[in-house]
Image (cartoon, rainbow, N blue to C red):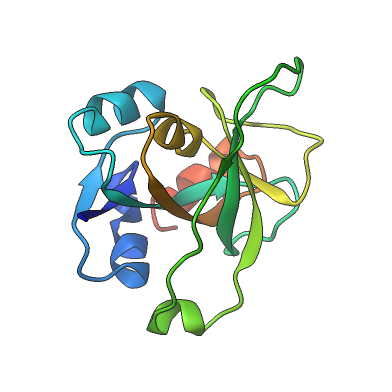
Amino acid sequence: MDKLVVIAEEQERQLAEQYFPGIKVLVTGVGAFNIMRSLRNISLDTEIFNIGYAGSSNFEIGTMVEVTESRLNHPNVQYPEPEYHLNEIPQNEETKKQTLIKAICYSGVDFVLQSDYRDCVFDMELAFICGMGFEKVHALKYVSDNLSLHDYRKVGAGV
C-alpha cells in the first residue's frame, strides 16, 4: 500500500516533514476542487496522511489536533450524510513527544469566521478527501487561528 501526505499549501510542508518523515508529500491547493483535481488519479487504497492548518473557536493557537471524525460544515441546515471515522495517527518520535487533542474536523467551502461549535477544528479539505473513498485516512491539524483570517495569514507567512 502506498502512503501519501496531503497538504493544501506549501507552507504546511514543514509540518508534514516533522510528523510524517520520509513519506511523499502532495501539495493540492486549498479547497474541494483542488482536492478532487489533485487526488482523482490516486489509488483509493493509498494510505492518506492529511496535515495542515485549521481554525478553532476555542482551542489554543499552536495546538495539534488528531482528527477522529470528518464532517461537512453546514451549521444552518441538517440533513443525513456520512460521518467519516479516521484512523489513529501512527506513533513515531514526534507524536510521542506530545499529547494530541482528539476532535472532529468540519470541512467547508469557505473560511469559517464564526461558529458556535466548540472542541473541534475547521478546514477546507479533509471531508472532501474522505468523500473520495480512500480506505485509510489519518489527519493532524495545527490550530492556526481562532476563526480569524488575519491570524491564519500571519501563521501561514511564518510571522
